[in-house]
Image (cartoon, rainbow, N blue to C red; front, side):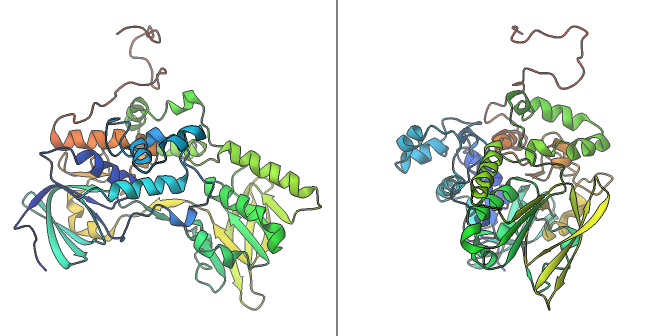
Length: 444
C-alpha cells in the first residue's frame, strides 16, 4: 500500500459520487485554493439505471441541476450541456422544463467526465483519524493506496429498502426484486403468469403503468398493493414548494427531534407521492383497455404486507395482507413480486474507524447541525442525503442540492463562495417574533 502525491493532503475528500457530491465537485472546481478529491467505487456515473424508463422525467425543473441555483454562469450547467451536445434548440422547442431521467443521467456523466477531482473505480475500505488528518485506505485501479484529507463529505447515498416481511422470500427461489433492478429483469417478469407491485410512490406507479401497457401482449395478471389509503399525488403547488427553502429548513431543524420524526411520517406526499399526470395516465389506460373487456388487474389500497411465503411446488408466492381499515386479513398469490419500497440510508462500514469523530443523537443517528456537519469538530465531517431526520423532506430534493453544497463550501472555506439565499419564501413557518406581521413584499 502506498501513499501517493508525496504526502499530499487534500482539503476535502468526498466519498461517494451521486448527484449531490458530483454537484459539490463541480462547484468546488473553480475555487483555486481548495484541493478536493471525490471517490466512487463504481466504474462510472450511472444514476438509478434500473429505472431509466424511456418516458420518465425528473419531478423538478432543469434549474435544479448540479450548479445553476448556486452559480447560473457555471460551465457545468444543464443548459451548457445541451448547448455543447447540440440539443439546446430541441429542448427549447420541446417547451418542457422537466428533463428526461435518462437525459439527466447523460448530463451528470458529461460533468463527471470533465472533473479531474472525481475518481471512479476507487473503493474506500477504511478511514482513520490521526492528528487533524483523515487517512483513507482505498482500493483503486492502480491497487491499494492511502489518501489524506482534512475534511470529509459523506455522499454514499441510499440503498434499496426491503421490508422485513419480505426478507425471507428475496432469495427464496422465486422472482422477487426491488424496483432498482426492474429494467434489467423486465423480460423475466413478463414471462410470469402474475406480477404484484408493492409500494405507493412514483417508482411503483411508473412500473405499473409500463407493465399495464403490455398486459395484453404477455397475458399476465397485474396487481398493485399499497399500504396507503389512496394513490397519493405528489403535492406540487407553489406555496407548498416554498417549503423547499432555507427558511423551512431553519424551522424544521429548530424543532425537537420527536416532533421532526412525527412530521416526516406525515409529509410523505410532499416527497414520496406520484406525479398527478401519471395518475391520470394510468386511469386513462385502464379505461381504454376496459373497452375490450375486463382487464386482469387489481389495485389494493389500505393493505399492509405482513408476511410472504414462497411455495416451490406451486411456483408461487403467497402474500399475507391486512386491510388496515377493515381490520381483515387476506391473501394474494403472485409468481413475481416487485418491491417498490423505497430506499434507506445505511452507514458505510468504513465509518467504524472514526466513530468517535461523529456526533450522534439519542437514537444513534447522525446529529447533523444546521450547516450539514456531523463531526465532533465543526466544519470537519459533512453529510449529503443522510439528514432527513434533522433537515426534513427536502433532504433528497435535487432542487436543494446546490444550496446545501453552497453551505458546505462556506463552512469549509470560511467564506461565501456562492451567494447563499436566506429568505425566499413569502410565508412564515414559525410563530412571528413580533406581534405585527411584516407586509409581503414590503421593503426591509
